[in-house]
Image 1 (cartoon, helix red, strand yellow):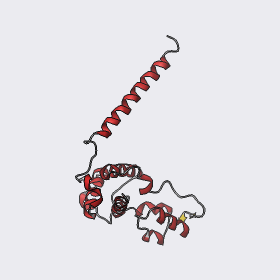
Image 2 (cartoon, one colour):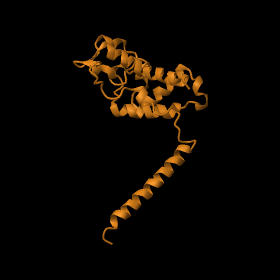
Image 3 (cartoon, helix red, strand yellow):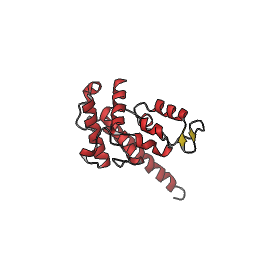
Image 4 (cartoon, helix red, strand yellow):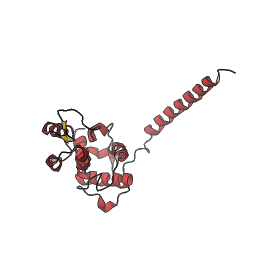
Length: 174
């Protein structure tokens, strides 16, 4: 019996992992697993801006426990609706499910904080850094941010309207 318990644990782990993969394959293949927040996914490329906004509003009310009337196009995700970093992952996941996107987190939001010395000096983005950020995130309006480009204020630029613009761009490129 000595020395066999690691093998038994490995067998149990492998068995559970195989079942997990199998169940995930079944769940993802099911037509009932996509939560569409009330939209018809067969006509994705013809959604109106209002339908996109309504879907995003439902996602944000669900994810952030925000009041329905607080979710406007101008509402900032962090300061107005209370989104935190973990909430952005949830929102990205729900956008993927609702609109049929895949792996949008890197496109939707910047990764980490910029550290390239060409782009950052003394806690602020340089003009070159602002251009790079605008190029990488064309769906976000950085006009107010450009007046005082402190790195700590980047998150304040993400509004409900920027999510709507992102979804419109993604759907148009399908």
